[in-house]
Length: 307
Image (cartoon, rainbow, N blue to C red; front, side):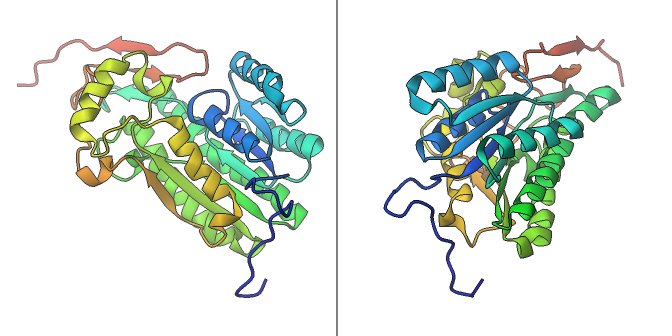
């Protein structure tokens, strides 16, 4: 590729930015993932949704089929921490829609929560398996497809502002997101010669079920005090950044972590959690499985006298 070359956009005369691209979106059945699926389809992409929650994934595909996207979207159940399942997800995408152009590694859970002195190591390992190993496997197997096609592609990973500061989220969650940010930079350097770009998006407080867990009003009241932009962060705000990173408009962008947070990080308010009951010294431990369909596990700790 020459220094001044810009990749050609398929479908000359069509303004849709992802026309005829094949995309794989994990964690695509709800929240940020589902918003991105809808946006990608509207931009002309063909999309394979990968998610552990089969019921939610199949319901979303049925909804999208009904509004005119039949034949351009399908669901594949996947546990992103399981390598054979991730490899199968990519294979399904290639078989159904052709070589993969975009991978959005978005699947996630709340993960291990509570006091670092009491966290169960099994919960810690589960958190890293989904949030860090899952991103690695998505890059590995999505990148293999892009290498084989010879066309290059774009890989986008969901990190978080929790990766960039202390107290942006629970300890295990924050640690995995910091790992994702670093994996992104290193993979971007390694894969650049294949014209595979790798970037991460760092959402701030986004109103999804995983964030507010039914406490929308309480969360919004705190956010009004600590977030400079006076609006709710919506899944579509993140999807728009992912669309940019997936498209030719970001052809010279790789190895970055794109913060989309309404100024929250710049404000320096991390440590003020938007949900009531979240403490700097938590009196509980457990595991938050997010929107997988598995309930949150919480164990409250007995009071201690450390005087």
